[in-house]
Amino acid sequence: MNSTIPRDPFNEAFMKNFISVALGLIINYINGTFVLVFLKNDVFHRDPRYILYIHLVINDMIMLSVAVGLQVATYIVRFFNVSVCCLVLLLANTVGKNTLLNLACMSIERYIAICKPLHHSQVCTVRRTYILICFIWTMSITPSLSDILIMAPVRPVSFFSTTIYCVKLYIYNTWQHDVKDIVVNVVYLSFVWITLIVTYIKVLLAANAAVSDQTSAKKSRNTILLHGFQLLLCMLSYVMPLLLTKLVELYPQSQSTILYIQFLLANILPRLLIPLIYGVRDKQFAQRIRLYFCCK
Image (tube, rainbow, N blue to C red; front, side):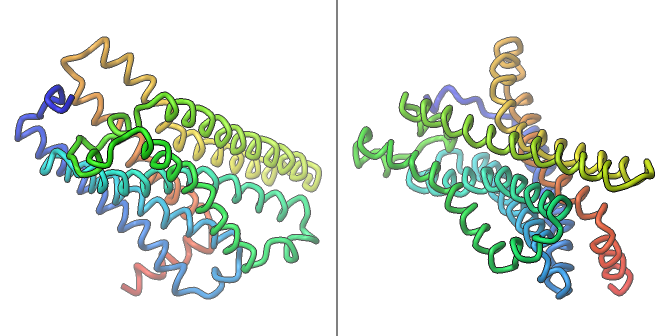
């Protein structure tokens, strides 16, 4: 199986890794600025909305670092110890699901703030927000741990000391893993989509009922479209493999290029657009970011 994986020419491999590392550093610098602004301003520490947002930013920074680091290491080392690869995949899969669940929680928080404003301060407290973040991590890491638990009984102990190309398909490739992935993805994506659609329909109706001018209503509709766009970006990692299978069958000679484009679209682009669009649109964040750069 390992011998069937083609190697890119040195110039092509260098250029791909250079682009990935450069984009990763730029995006993490931008997102790191949002984290720094959050840490230096106490007003954000008391607002569950900003706590969930900065958790999303930190989660995306981890996801981007793991993705770029794994890509570069794969070109250099090529094959990994199975145990090390399992740990890397555990972290990558966990933070990937964190983003989806975090978006759902952010939409619920906005629903309570707009549709139940009198109860918002009692329901959405700082303490409960941090408990919710712990719950998100628990719900995200459970499916990733189950991959290892499913594999352990069907693989010999010696398998974990061998080396392999660090791709999930090459390690978790039993029918039990396929069934688990289908069930987990359907449940998680259905929950997030239903939560997003229901809460923002209610938010839209509440906004239209509360205001008489079209400007405020248009702003509410734009917010709904933005969160829908955020979720669509997150879903690229689920949709891309299906599309890639067809593209590779049609253009087998361009397999490496297709996989690299998929990597950029599914792993790097969303890590920039999701925090950047949300943070820049927020007046408090945008104002403090401008102050930070001016003082710097």
